Length: 429
Image (cartoon, rainbow, N blue to C red; front, side):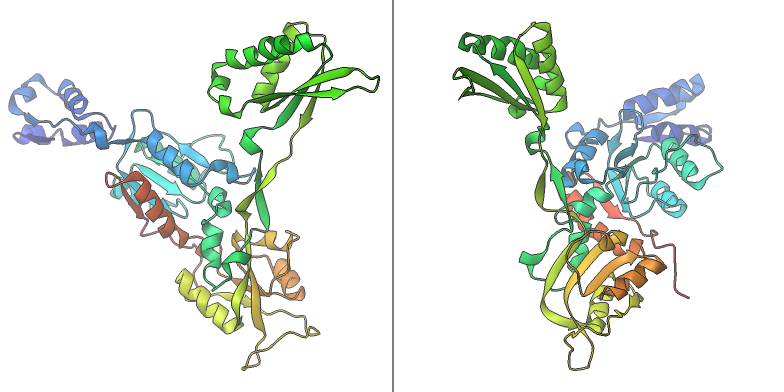
C-alpha cells in the first residue's frame, strides 16, 4: 500500500515504517498510523490498500513444520539445542528465509538489510543458556536484534548431521564411493512407533478379560484427548498360556509410550483390579542410513594428493591441513608415484573427535573440520591420513542443498537464499 501527501505526511515516514515492521495486516497498519498522527493528516493522505492473498501466505508455524519434516529434530544429539529458538509474537508470516552456517553480527546486518523473516542458522546461536539479554555480549545483542526486528531463528544442526542425505552424506560425496558401503559410524535409534514400554496384565479368570481390557485400559486411554490423537500407536492383544500348577491364565499385553502407560496404570489402580501386572522397557532399533559420521569404501583407490584436490573442489576452498599417517611398518599399497593409496574414508562434519571414539572400522583417510593437536597425533599413529578443512568449511557447502530442498517445500511464495557474508572466522595469511 502507498501514501501520497504533502511534506507533512513525509514527516511521519518513520512512524509508518515502524508500524509496518510489526507484520500487521495492511488495514491494521493504516489504522494504527492514522490513530498516531494528527487528525488533519487524515484529510491530506490518499491511502491505497490491497487485501493480502492469504492463500499464498506462509505462517511461521507452517514453515517450521516443513523444516522439521525435512530434518526431524529427534535425530539431533541429546546435548544439542535445535528447533525454533526465537519466535516473534503472532501473527508472523514468512516471505523471506535466509540460511547461514553461523549467525554473526555481519549476518544479522545482512538479514535486516534484506528484510528477512526467518533465519535458518545451522549452528544454534543460543546454545549455552542465557541468563539475561543485554548489550554486553554479542550473542545476546543478536537475540535482542532478532526480537526487535521480528526475525525468527531456527537451527537444525545435528539433526541434519544424522539425516540421510544430510551434511555428512554431502561431505563424503567429495569422493567416488561405493554407495552400498556408506554407513553411519553412530547409527541413530528410535522406539518403533514411539512405543517405549510394554504393560502386561496377568488374568486368571477368563470372565475378567473384557472388563480389564475395556474399563481399565482402553477407557483410560481414550479418556485422554491427547492420547486419542495417537491411537494408531496403541496396540493391545491377549495371549493364553498354562501355569506351572496346571491352570490357565491370560496375558493382556499393551505396547505404549510413557504417557499412555501412566494412564493405564491409573486405570488399574482406580478400578481396584486384583490382577498382577508387569512393566518392561522396550529396546530402540537402529534407523537405516541415519546417524552421525559416515564411513565408506572407494570405488577405486586414490592418492592423498587426489583426495586433497577432490576435497578442495567439493568444498570450494583453497587450503586444507593434512596429517600423514605414521605407521611405517604397515605393508600398505602404493600408487605409481609411491604415495600410499586410500581405499576407505571416514568423515565427520564440524569437530571430528568422535571419529576416534566411535569404535567403528578404521579408515585410510579421516576428513573433518577440526581436531585438537593430540587427536591428530592419535589419528596418524593409528594409521590414518587426516584432512582438516576448518570447522565451518566442512558444513557450509551443504546449505545450498538445504536451500533447494526448502525452496521446493515452501513453493514460489517464499524466497529462500544463502547468506552472502557468512564465512569461516579463520583465514590463511
